[in-house]
Amino acid sequence: QVQLVESGGGLVQDGGSLRLSCVASGRVSSINAMGWYRQAPGRQRELVATIVTGGSTNYADSVKDRFTISRDNARNTVYLQMNSLNPEDTAVYYCHAYTFFTRRDYWGQGTQVTVSS
Image 1 (cartoon, one colour):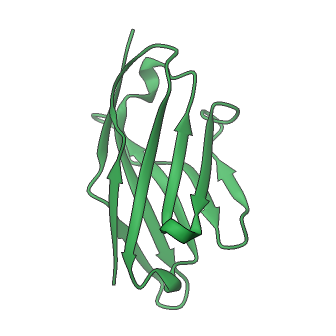
Image 2 (tube, helix red, strand yellow):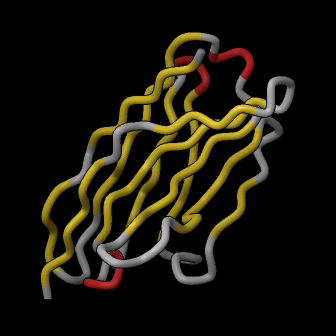
């Protein structure tokens, strides 16, 4: 089992920045990929960014050049640095982890990000 706890959400003005953190616990050695998803009211959950064990990253087109995903293996933590935020980025942001061996998905409880215009 893997547990994920997010933090760092909040209210920010248009053009501002926030950094989200996700701490993993449990069988963290089994995690092969981690990432961030978001879900805005009335919309489906969508991929924001991912990072795999080898360090490769992937971003949604809507956040490229504004958001950066990174990890600190010593702290079992993944970060999402969000710059140049706009109201369209308002959503609940979820941390996600995937284990290839067991083909399981794990989710955090979500953290609210609200960007005011």
